[in-house]
Amino acid sequence: MANRFGENDWNKKRQQAQPSINRIRSGLEKKTRWYEQIGFLRRCQKEGLVPKGLRVKLPSSVLKSEYGERLKLRSEKRVLKRAISDLFVKIQRMDRKLAEIRLHLNQSLGFTNVWIQKMERWVASSLRKSEAKIKSGLERKLKDLRLQ
Image 1: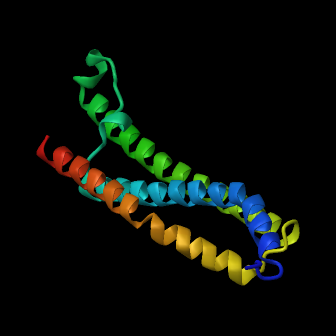
Image 2: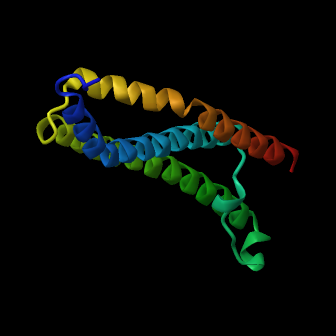
């Protein structure tokens, strides 16, 4: 039995779009990870905790003084604040990249905005398991930080 008219064209078009879809998937995956990290860092900030990778090391001679302790706390707060800010900048850049990919799919390949939105929702729903995995890992880290 013959294929429906245009089915072959659709498959070719879809295959051409696959690299863009893969880039959208990886971009959404990164954005998800960054949002979870922002939540984690904000909880650390709220509770006065500092993740190991963001701790500030000062010479022991400076650290022993009262000024050294204040300097360390202030510096760690700044580092934490800067880390959160950097994550928001990364998210903003990724939003721009994703908009460029959507534009390419729409203008160059001729996909409709509705199709692009549906595809993005499908990709986002496929990332739910990895989102939960990231969230649980960060919860574990927060729990460990509270115990220290």
